[in-house]
Amino acid sequence: ALSQVGGEWPADGRIIGIVAGQDLTGLREVRQAVLDAGMVPLVVAATGGTLDDGTGEPVTVQRTFTTARSIEFDAILLAGTPAAGADAYAARDAKADESRAHVTDPRVLLLVSEAYRHGKAIGGSADAAPVLEAAGVPQSAPGVVLGQAGPEVLGELTGLLAKHRVWERFPAQL
Image (cartoon, rainbow, N blue to C red; front, side):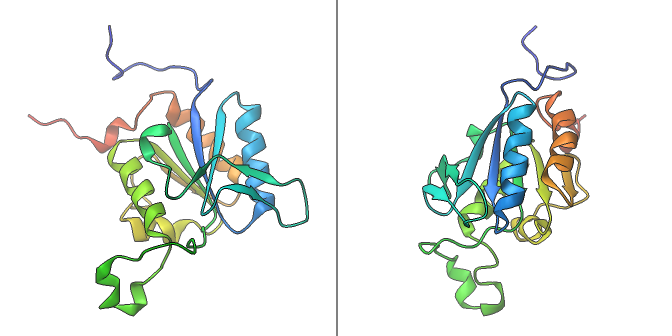
């Protein structure tokens, strides 16, 4: 009776972690789409406060790259490629290979890779593919959705949320 496997539930009230990219217009659109779908958007960015590019209403940041962990979210949506925070600390191995240094913020890579290992739905809009690649998440994996616009990606993520997790990532062991 308590199993999450095999059932489907409504997406109402689910928490979507939206990792802010460079395009605030796209971020605003997907944030509103999450609200309209009855879910809770939590915007994750390099710093707290608000994001404002002067073209629309400022977007409030609820979590920073430092404070966000995948356990808080039912799904992760990358609204483009986020810039590395000023306080980003690249892995020590990056010093040996400068071409890999700061592909994206290492804390975002941790967030995405943990969400993948936890079987959570992951979506990305616009130019999020390099973040998935850097995090070691195959774009063709079950539960990974890429598209041009955030609301389009959110539609597919909502369908994945009905099963709570992407169980296809965990093949049955005999």
